[in-house]
Length: 264
Image (tube, rainbow, N blue to C red; front, top):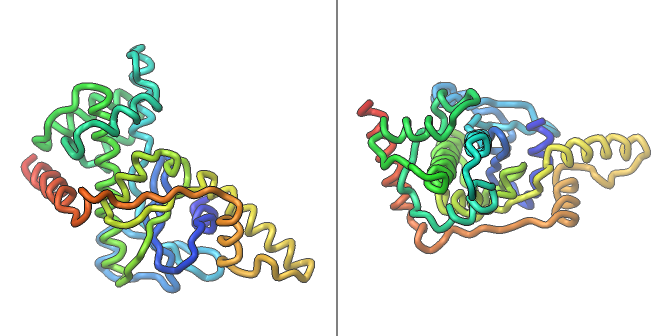
């Protein structure tokens, strides 16, 4: 599934990172060879086989599962104004980085009362405790973008690479607030889409096999398959906002989170 999603990344250069963002997230790079260092092992990165001998050097990260469980909890509680569209619109205007939590905390993995767990994590970290659905939503998205930032930076350091763009594919590519926060957090442009990258990548690899049987070289390599996706799907570009350039606010949020964890 992930290999298919990475085939579906509509990159036009090899200087890209990808985030397959959905219920869960995978943050990584496409490489020619694995990174087999002790540092990579300690950072819990994996090297997975990709199409045409490529290597997917990636880290598993929490995804929009946390927000989905929050929405389910609020729906069960019959709270008004907690539909996804309304919450995202309100969260966009909420104070940025007011509260961040460790979004990879294992307590966020099981189903249950996710807003209560977010409040618990915030209190433990010494962060302002979010009390409203809008504050919780903004906390989840800020924290997720902060995790993307941290793990992307680690991937680049471990692989000795630089990138010019982050491609976000999967369902999370439709969450424009998360995509903008990811651009702000990483300081890199984000290209969002397609949302069905895994299905597209799978179909393209099968189509290439059939074409090869017929003697055609129409989809001969990854570049050709990705070019077809770019020509047939609308992508959305998100640039880092001027206020986020330099990353000082995100640096400060990351320090707060680290200090909060150390203090518990």
